[in-house]
Image 1 (tube, each protein chain N blue to C red):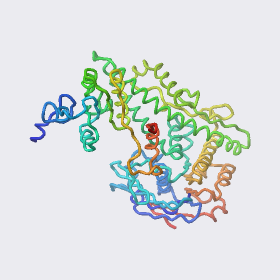
Image 2 (image 1 turned 60 degrees about the vertical axis):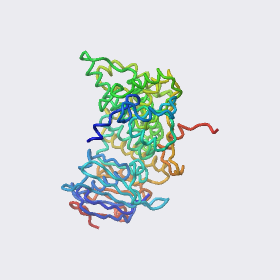
Image 3 (image 1 turned 30 degrees about the vertical axis):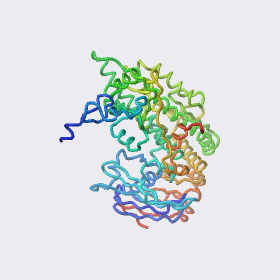
Image 4 (image 1 turned 120 degrees about the horizontal axis):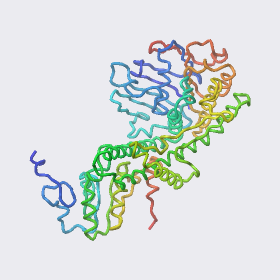
Length: 151
Length: 375
């Protein structure tokens, strides 16, 4: 109960936070030029566990789903657009799962942000330790779609 | 492929029944409503995860029980596979291959293949376009399991887009703000992208099936009739190219935009496709005689059998539900000649009288009586 009362949302990125501005947004050691957009606070926690990402986040609070009455206005999309257009952000990474609703949200947000900065989306493909011959068709098709040039 | 054993547990009217298939042909004989078709339905579920008779899994579970099970052993050229489906009243299904539960049902499809032919199949000619779309989707799912995933995605986009159109429909009647055109545009492009995949796969399978069905129909009608199976997609398909189909899709969405807003539903897309059966340049649906329609359905079923064998590389199972009696001798013989011993065949009938004695001799005959099978 106490935790529930204390925890609110960060006013900048909308991640769960006890303070008005969350630890990640306040941290001086994090790259302020990169913003990773996710659907849910749980995704921030998952990405943080990797300790590979050093930029900042933006939590949308869900996915576009008209069946559930969720449109762009129900998500934290306009604060994101404001944030990106007003600050000098180098890159926005869209890290949203590849479901029908996720893809729609990615396309929608991507179009709004493209005029202001470089927009990328995370790749979907084979799991580590996964053998190509055992990968299913859906995953393989996605992996092919997201292929890139050998460096 | 050969289905060696089938075990039904609390499935339909079977409490616990083991069946060992000992001959390429099995005849299930019994009065009506004893469970003959239920057994074929179990095989159909193993092949397609669909039933053409049940709307909900609840109907598939024995009355008074919460869950039922179908377990089978299948011999293929590559080896033996155990298949299992658990059905629950709640509708949640579990599927397993070699006793390992699969995370996705998609991976279960394509292991076993079957063509079902029942007296209900005349509806394929006489019924509405939904019946024919359902038929081609079931066939595609067996040939290209990934199609099940594409179709499910398409249906999700369709439902979402319809919900959006309905909202806007409701709000435009009041003083509420109008449509978010940007959001609708994103749903449009999703619908067109996934819809184009559905359309192209349907077109491709019909291209391969049509000549097979045509030659069967010619043979059965003694070269008096010419059958054309034609795909009539709602979105015009001029070229089998993803970008072209998507553009045609978007163009048509643009043309129908006002009607869609007015009706609050999606009017463009493969969910409104039609498949036309034409005999001697006349639509079989309206003008075909009973006999022509029966020949047509038989030709299509034989074509399915052939196509699956071509694509999979092994003959599928054939399920004949109460149809032999409805076919005249000429058509019966054509069917039996084709089957011979190449296709494992499960046949249900109320009387053994209609069968050739040669046939009876080489078949395993099982008697079905109120949910029990006697050997």
